[in-house]
Length: 278
Image (tube, rainbow, N blue to C red):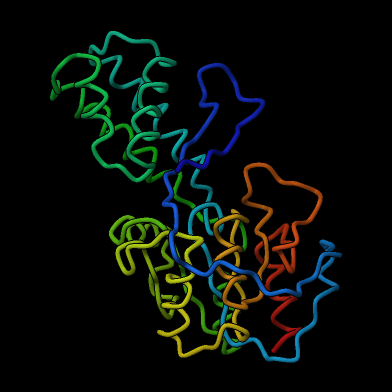
């Protein structure tokens, strides 16, 4: 099954759709609690809880940093470098073919350039491949910067005695590479990746593992993520509180979603919630 993020208003040659592979979940109870708020507002004024908050769980991509912008810019650079090295395609054609591979194999697929070159040339040209890989990595590293106020917000949570975690669909090494580039790797109590459970969100299993590792009950935790149907659905199915990271959402709807107890337009808004709930 494929979910897609529509991109609008892009300049020519930039990517119109980013595909992210997910799994269909069979036999898992995804029933949501029968009661949750539907009258949301972005002023953080609703949805009180009598249970003190003890933990905040974060999605990684597009919640702690702008993954889509990073991926887009890095592939633009790789396409240009591969063309300069002799690939007989336009930048638009290279981008389209790369995302065809991502559509088939998933956005974390690590042999995307090799696969694209075999499709175009019938073989892997090492010069073209190396040119693309180096250009991609340079831009990726430059673009791996956390959203404003992220580090200070995480430190403030820790100082308040709140446990913090990451739940990501990325493979373990990719998630940790991103956290290390962001210089956030030492702040979290636990990091749960796809490799830990073999399940992707919205399966409740990754969320439950994070709770178990922190020795936290679901109602004591808040989940924050940009993708409502994945990040918030799985958390809500366990009874966690949820906040939509609208600042990282590709399409920021003004109308709140019933799965989101709160809406965040800046990551530091989390501190207002925590101070109200602890």
